[in-house]
Every structure is written in C-alpha cells, then in structure tokens.
Length: 225
Image 1 (tube, helix red, strand yellow):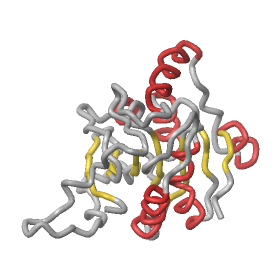
Image 2: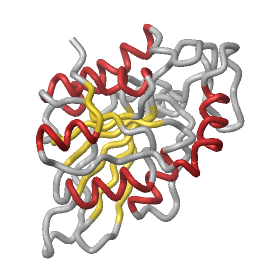
Image 3: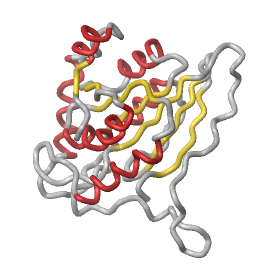
Image 4: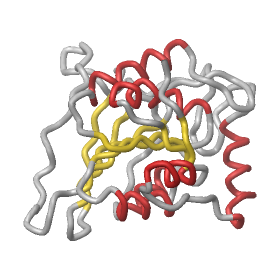
C-alpha cells in the first residue's frame, strides 16, 4: 500500500512542521513547457533529456571490470565537520521509468526500481519524503515512505523553496526527494551544490550532505541497477 500524500500546507496544519511551499506564479509558463516535453505520449526524448517508456535507461555504467553488474549500495557517510552540529542529508532521485500520457505512472520496470529503493534506504533515519505533484515521482518514493511510516509531502515547485524549507525545517536530519531531470539540478544548486551532475538517467541516487557551515558534499550511487 502506498503511503498517504499530503501537501505542505496540510502537513503544517497536522504536524506543525512548516508553512506550505508554493509554486511561484512567475514560473508557471516555463514549468508547464518543460513538463509538456517530458510527458509527451510518443515517448520521445525532450530537450531536458527526459525519456518516455521506450527511452533508454542510464544503467550502462553500473558494471565492473569483468562486465558483471555491480550491486547498488550506500557509500560510507561523508566526512564532514560536525563541530557546529550534525549535517543535513538529502537523498535525491529522479523518478523511475514512466509510461506514456499526460501524467503517466511507472512501468513495471519502474515499479521494480521503486521497490529496490526501499531496501537501500531501510536503515536511513528518514524524517520526511518529498515528491512533485506528478504520479511518477510519488510512485517512485511511495514504497520507501510506507517502509518508514511517513506521508509523501507533495510540493509543486521543488527547487529553491523546497530546498530552503529542508535547510530550515530538517536541519541535521535525513530526507528523501523525488524530482525530474528538469528540476533536480536547480534543487541541488539551491541546497548549495555549485556544480550539479547530469540528472537524465534512471536509477541514480544522489546523496547531498550539507554541513552546518553550508559546505555540500555530493555522493552518487544507484538503486535498482
């Protein structure tokens, strides 16, 4: 069973965690254009690199020297200065493989990848799970949210405002966020990462460790590889 989904506004009224993170009106046209490119029914690759159901996934790099698959695993915790307090750790993923249509859900392959994320993050002390308002991001993190007994906090504009929310409301804690290839780079920059990686492949898990002094360490692994 998928975890319940709530808006930031609803979560604030129930848990008194924070104010709702809204979508700036000025960003609507640009966001709708990017979303339209990603959600086309033909499955063609848009300019942002989002691929449809027939697109290739980005798992080609997950092999060892012998050509055999390398199991996905979390790296050791980033070595950061904790003198001023514990770091904030953000686990970020692009949604798993999607179907076609205006707001497609995950394919069978995507659902299997979402299930694989559960085991990878089972022992991580997550306190919040965030996703965009589209089905594919919610389905990607739903099994993990359920495993931790957490609702999925739905946020329509996941860049600067969600990053600011995390850095103020989840200081020293661990959270999970599912976004899109056209949102995750801005999200990472807003967290303080100067040079975000490519976010066009399925199955990448980015771990951003934000130290109390604002320094950000990026680590990358995979899920469902």
